[in-house]
Image (tube, each protein chain N blue to C red):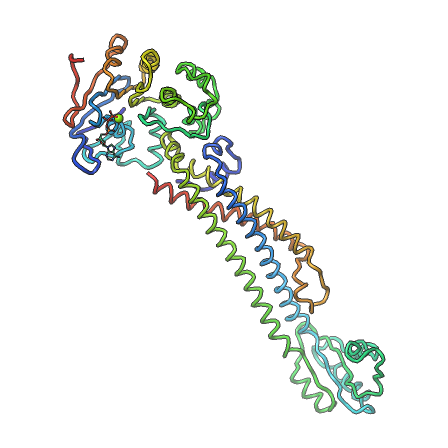
Length: 301
Length: 225
Ligand SMILES: Nc1ncnc2c1ncn2[C@@H]1O[C@H](COP(=O)(O)OP(=O)(O)OP(=O)(O)O)[C@@H](O)[C@H]1O
Ligand SMILES: [Mg+2]
């Protein structure tokens, strides 16, 4: 039996007469459409999860890696001097693109959630914060730490790696799980279509026998079934993809990377990836029905 | 066209048919008779490749059936029209579509709805039943439809298994005339029947050989008809 390109072409071109030789069967049809819709719906979320965790991994791994903080912990009267000394070191340090001390207002804003807006910073031994951005190739953090220890005793360099690394690892793992889920969804879809196609084939054993007697080839009979299941999977998956896509679209969005759960959205051109879901579902149904038909047609008679 | 050489067949028990040799030459007309259960239907099935012989050789259009691929068998069935004793249709499609099914499955859609279909349906007296579903048909109507379906492809060979079993005398004469007509056009015809009067009625119109299965073997029946 040949289920190659010519069959794909014949299938897409359609053969209304060939379609009718197999009676419309209610329950396998509904089963396939429903399964395809449900799987596509799930696939949208798996895809969104993969994309979002990929995005987070990139942000935490790349953008945050380029920023670091220096705390100047010093008595009130030395704080300004030490801050200036630290900034001077940073100015010449290789790999540091820019460095600046946060203003009082900025620090006040950082602390406001905990201490309220009326905080008088200059009367409190609050560390002064310096934010530094590195060049893309990074800077020598260990060397900088030594140099600061020698020249600015109150300076503590925090390059965020302590909390960043596990987050990046988690995000990467999450992305892997997302792709794995997508794969499992495709496999489940194949299993369901195989079951439905087998049920349809055995329910139509009589029809197949008649078709054989009048000279139908296995390929012709298989196509009648394949076409059906492929179109059903395509229709169901399109529906599921649209509903799932709408659900993701309507998720409340958050701009900051802190909003991990709300950051599940899909961005820009990546929405086009959703179109792959129905196509993939159709391809899976095509393959699964073809395999089921090849097997069953050989067993029958 | 169809050639059996020292063919034997058994369904698993004892041999039902033994040492059968038969040659259906192009344009020949055969009857096959014998009491019920002697293996007429079985012999026909051997003749269109539905059964493989347990011994000996069956050649369809000069090809041994044992060497045929599944698709080859499908192609053979387009050249050999069969009227089955227990004819089966696609119950969800109207009769006209069932009769033209051989054309449909071989990709000849245009002809499937053509004038030949109308003419054929009128010949077998089913014009008014074209839109009926097969389960709504009487036994005789089914057999007439079976004959129409068997010949719609204008096959080289027509094998008919009790084509007139449920049919009144007048209609069976009509069906017989259709088969004789096809034979005159050069088609090979084999009719299995235990209705000897049918055979006698044909004698005047066509040169037919009458074969009989007796004691598991094929004999040429003679003057006793
Ligand atoms: N699939 C089968 N498996 C086992 N035995 C079978 C099978 N088909 C037919 N037989 C047996 O083989 C014998 C011949 O059957 P067949 O149908 O060829 O007879 P027939 O001559 O056509 O009879 P009738 O005139 O009643 O149609 C019968 O005894 C039947 O019971
Ligand atoms: Mg019989």
